[in-house]
Length: 559
Image (cartoon, rainbow, N blue to C red; front, side, top):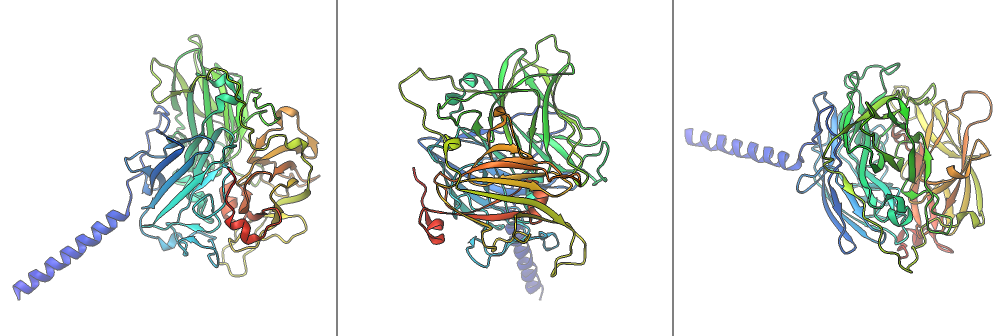
């Protein structure tokens, strides 16, 4: 009897140990965050070689001291949120392993992806689900490429991405983040993001050649203990390169700089919900910033000459997901205080509270560890620059004009729970507002080669951020008035101001360029991710010339 009991106890211990080992094996390493007031060192960089960048990434999660769930992408050797460097024409191969832990049923997303057809990866969404969006890149919206409508990777599963950048990809700053409908906000608030750099901007903007280069990633997260936002209490806390700038202390990060030196700053607003208005101040005086690229496209580079045209500004409004690359001059030894700030932003009576905050204090130092140097310009040759995407768009004939609008309501869905909640919509004018569902038919169908003029209205009392996947657009008008030439830049995200309740609806008019290689189904949406998760997204289908929907899904991009 004793021996049988010992055997059973031993078996129980072995099973318990096996289960514990299995659970531990399924859980990835913790997401590590620096302390407040730390130096904002950039994430380590990985570079392509011979046209290929192979990366193993683990999607992991952990909990911070305030009980907030963190998310991160970590390499096999422990590098969190690596910056991925590729060249136009390169291929990025990612082997993604999901190790966030077991599903947590009480935390299922409010809205879920429908896998009635076209599943890529897993078929059932749960609280562990992830996929990856390569934001701003002009690449295929196909399974194992930049496809977010039907792609799911659940805990314990692996998935391969093969991202083929076209040879005409504009050089500049892009980023990657999860894009599972219903839980993209949670993942991005948790910090599961990283930067991508397409190399070669110095060929289009020679002023950056040889400069010291900083990659600065601004993220947001929930405020500890969730106090009601208002006044000095923000809707969301911020961080800079993961250094927390948290309410109420809001201790800024530190940037170690050598005095009086020109530097090239590459800033991505990796926030889920927070809009930025960036300024650089020395002893209270706003400094000039020489913008050389927005949303990954060198400014002024699309007129056919192949050379960019820098734009000097004193502040930069950066919507959620927006990127700005600019040249600054660091404080001289006579400056007592240099700061990098975001100003207060009015998001409307229904919007978030985005107060002013200091992101970083610039401190004079002998060393600036982690800051790299841009390559110098090669010796002049007779070789011409490759024609970038979107070149000479102004000369193209407009093939269609469309009006879309943002709207909201507080109706309880017919099959929903009892709570009252806001529903978010983006609708083609004349159609019925519909919450996003991945099995919805395309709201817009167009053809490769088309050039379309879209006017997007905001019929709500809060700002929205219009984002287009797979392609860029050129900003033409605000509220029907042509914007100055210096503002007519190529973007993938643009802010649409809120409606005051009287007068015309605020709007932007943009020129959509479908002349590139991208065909298939992809999405457009508000990039305030609470709104996207709440339904403010729709599908567009781009058909090959004379082709069908099935041909669009299997199309291979041109070289």
